[in-house]
Length: 59
Image 1 (cartoon, rainbow, N blue to C red):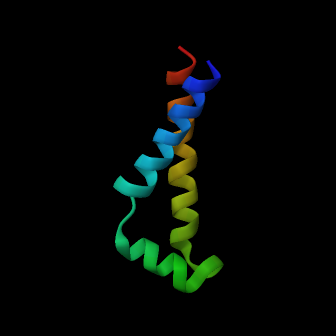
Image 2 (cartoon, rainbow, N blue to C red; image 1 turned 30 degrees about the vertical axis):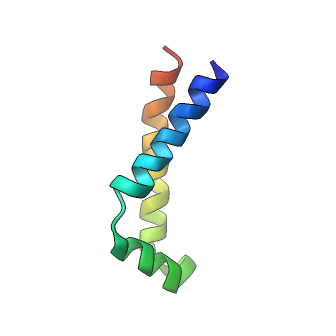
Image 3 (cartoon, rainbow, N blue to C red; image 1 turned 135 degrees about the horizontal axis):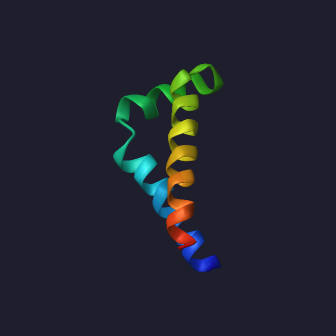
């Protein structure tokens, strides 16, 4: 079960990083750092996608 959970969390992070995030978000996160609200949006997106994937891994 641990490997399934790990792979589902990695998949959630890949989806959040590469499919749900634009280049504009990445540039603003790098230039503004903690002042960029895109950083916090990205954190919520990764958290939600992980939250969705965890029950799927434990079935």
